[in-house]
Image (cartoon, rainbow, N blue to C red; front, side, top):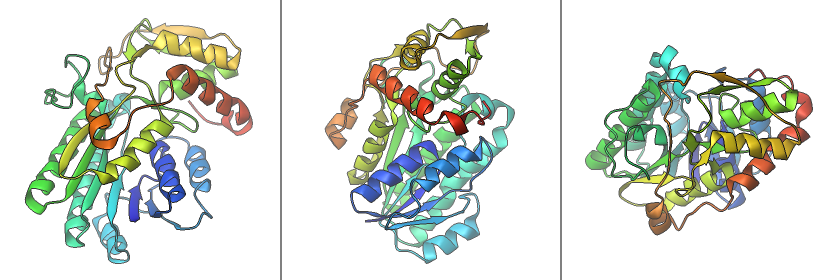
Length: 322
């Protein structure tokens, strides 16, 4: 297959593109290389893809309709995997407009280009943040119409657009709701990366709340495998990709990181953030049934691998601003 992967220099995008190349697909990767976080991480991920056969990179912004039109005109794609997004709940509160233009308008631009050029299949990233207030474990059929952050609101709008384009134009759509993705070369605005670096550097952790809040952590390789598997989905489906109803507390994550690094954390407790969810837990029966997917890396093993990667890359990671 020839697949367009947007956000290919991002955390999930780079690992997904790598897995597609490993199975023999041709990948056209696009990314606008914005400065939401340190570009050295994005360049590190991109370098892992450059030079590999069947990979082409274009510095393109999905908000730029004309640039997308030129891109689609130059290729015949079998599918689009849309992993380009402004991510992060807290940052969306201070900069909501850029979340709307990237996450919602960018998705619309892709959908219009797909119809224009007869691309039949879309796999797109969504978020477990939509489930705020729902009963656990979170089901794909839960009511998600009351988001508590601009980030979640823009992702909900993107989901609605994709479902509409499926109805109007027959595009196969797989909407993947990811649950707290972590692993090597992660995002420095997320707690696993920041906590590992703070502990490794001997700096205090900034912990919002008491640490008893839980997350259904999902290792990056499992997420990328599920994303690739979703290319085989047909119709219009919303699918959870999460740890499988095995949530881990933030305190337990800190303990696992301490063990992986062989260093104790210094914890600076801060008040809870009102945009943060207290707990997340994924029901993944649908992913098992439709995609034959389930996570294989436990949080304990995943945090060990992630801490090891940070130790191995300590030199240049020291320069990353948290």
